Image (cartoon, rainbow, N blue to C red; front, top):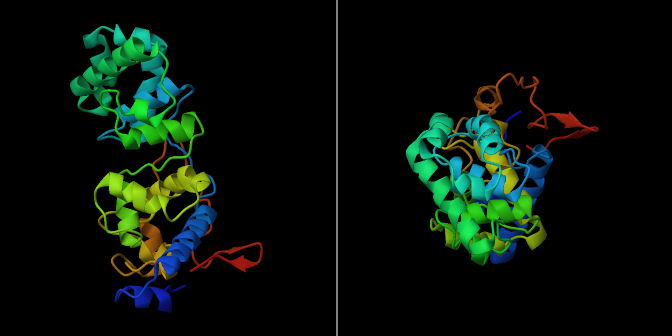
Length: 270
């Protein structure tokens, strides 16, 4: 099934979109992505706010699957901020080696944990303004922790999120703080955390940086960047990618509706 951008998106390409129309288009896109990825969630395994904070720091320049493969050992050896702060550096480096940049990451974990012990009695703070004072913790990491460990809505502006909101032309900003502020204006606060999840899922699975799978995209009709990637539905579907844990098998077809699929008698959005 072929997909084409709507007339409204064609007008957008020449700069004819009002703020109200932008908000409506953004929210339609979000609803469609939520239908495509109803299972979207934080893909870092964690049981406590501290574990999520450390895992997020470790996720730089590697995959969540890789981080999830080392954190069980990390947290079994050093289960608290106090233990992490006092860890033997060489021993921790050996555990973190598979994640890459293991020396720098070891230093980050030890320094971060020491700050939590010294300034917050060993407990991860629950306010953004406190989290961002911790060494190596920016707004992105803070919002991951707030949204997923504490249930406080936040926008996680990572590389996928930033790429997609610019492709969708929800904003032209590149600075993460400005991106966060611009997108916050388009959505209800209660939706911020899930919006982050579905955009990151879509960026990892469909709207890739180099070759987006436009022909298998459930939001093509609202995307002014449609056509930058593969538009043939069969070829585009072959581009879909899923990061799987070792031993996991992805169903074929993958979960969630694709363009042209029929669910409950209703065709999925083109």
